[in-house]
Length: 217
Image 1 (cartoon, rainbow, N blue to C red):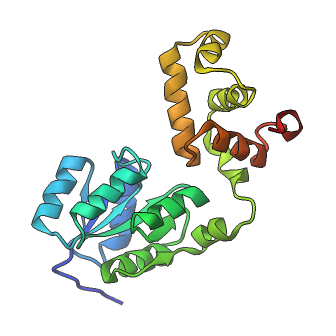
Image 2: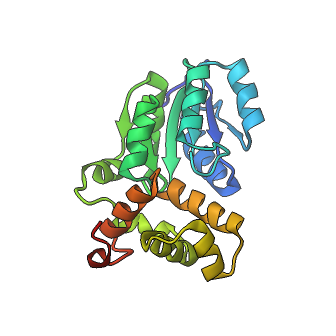
Image 3: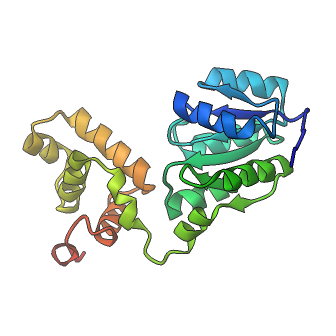
């Protein structure tokens, strides 16, 4: 099953060397022209030369600021395909990617066949969600296993935010700077795909990070 799309290079955009090499070894036999880039400028350069390239990327690890940011890239390079290969994803993120026109998603734990299928779909401009992504999409209660993505100090901060503490109060309670709390907060929102404290609290209740009895808002 060889697909020789000589005009359509497959570009692996990931900051992790291990992931780039792993994906390259899976894709190389099928897409001999596969290339990998580790930064934004390199990616722009490849897209300039090959506007129809298919980008295989992890939106969390590559230097995209957010899903909106990757959506902007998609707008600038409409002919390019984007295949997301990531460690974990939640329903909000799948929806946000879908709204940005990115509809080909697999997880890094998926098998070789699913990854190849996703890249093939990306080349044809077709939508493809691997089984594990569909599971996330169809699950009634999403958050349980995404919550493990948070570090212990982040979970701590989620609890304090849920208890109604302000950023300033959290900073003095934890003996860290206001700026550090803001950074944690930004990372928590990004990892969980939420955009407000209210959403975060609902998420935290569903994920069992906080005892919902205490926070019936």
